[in-house]
Image (cartoon, rainbow, N blue to C red; front, top):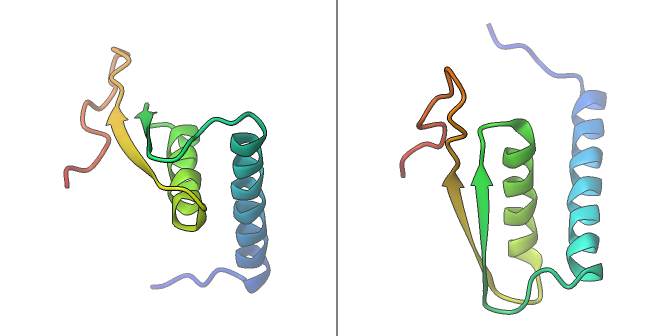
Length: 90
């Protein structure tokens, strides 16, 4: 059975996502965090915040006026029960 998400919820999600991407881009610009041809390493802990940051940076990379590369790396925090391979292998 497929559950349909109400259009309102989808619109709210898209608005929030776009706002957060915009704010991330503004912070990068305001603080001069990424220059042309930089490589940005995103350490993935497996939490929602690191996945969100990666998604924001990937979206910004597509529309940025400069070129930069993104490298995502799994960060094993040595916590009990932490899945060692939270990032899929490509």
